Image (cartoon, rainbow, N blue to C red; front, side, top):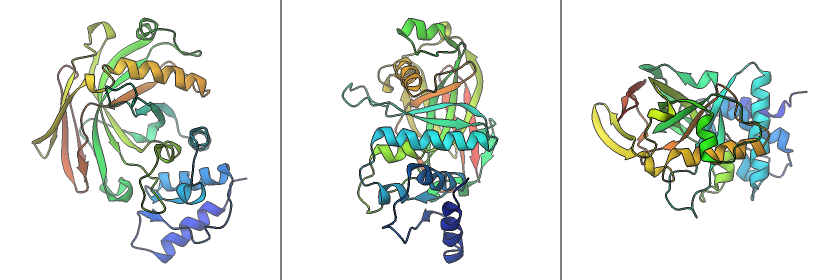
Length: 291
């Protein structure tokens, strides 16, 4: 039976703060909630584009195992509601330092897909802003039920490579204004808001994993650029880790899955309507408008 507590919390939020759509507020902080109940609340916030401190308020030291349990519980609830899983996003990959390379995953649904040259409402940005990421995406050709043993094996399982723009902003926020541990972001879905994929599709044999570049333009002004080596030397390294991590968590990569491996540059932030364009060196140009 679906827990009604979440709906009560959000209804109270809207009734008490009709002009506020950025943060949930939990008055009864002494209450104890199960991970399942917390997943319900985090899911409601995610689906309504609202930031919430409920996790950091009730679990001061969230372990990564519980973070993934919450996220995957949300995924199962969304699938039961009729959503379709289209793939996975990676975070913690934008580094060349192996000691800082800590890949994490979040799910992506069909409702988060946007067409090239499409639009996204600014009020879908949790907290009123979001970042623009240039991503390299991989579409999977064959199931990887047990993960993979080598990069060569992984490449054999890739159907094609595609460029993508991801719009991202975490719904999880800190309850006490201290820096938020990544586990809370993982629990809430790793900040995925929306994604646009390009029309250019390259086979792995035709793609230069280490030298793909991306330039991001906001309102026709170049604001940042980057290169695929920023993703731990090459995005294929991130995909390798993801294939094995997802298999370990009981959600192995499957035929048709799209996996985006991390942003090629330091992400610019948007808080107002804008024209967005990312130009890749071989994966084409992709555009999106926020309004």
